[in-house]
Image (cartoon, rainbow, N blue to C red; front, side):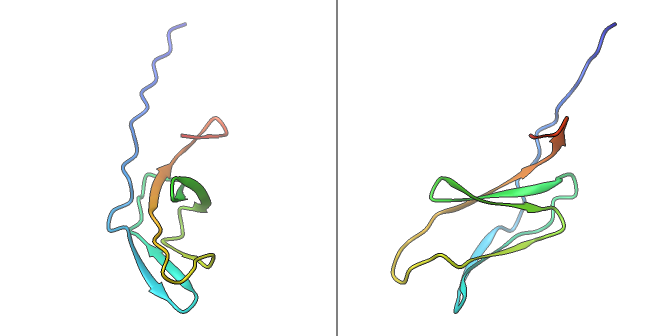
Length: 83
């Protein structure tokens, strides 16, 4: 038996941006139709995993006059694992 698999890397969601609000920092992005969901990172640490139907998240754990770095990664479920 010969099996060949090709895993195409998912692209990151486009138009990722953050805006300050009274409730915290609102992150938003355009939907990636190939993704099963998104993983959001704050200052290099995993913050939240979100379903692909969502394109917005509010980080309520922020402090005034403090800088934060956010990243977002698309994921695809393959064999029960996020890739």
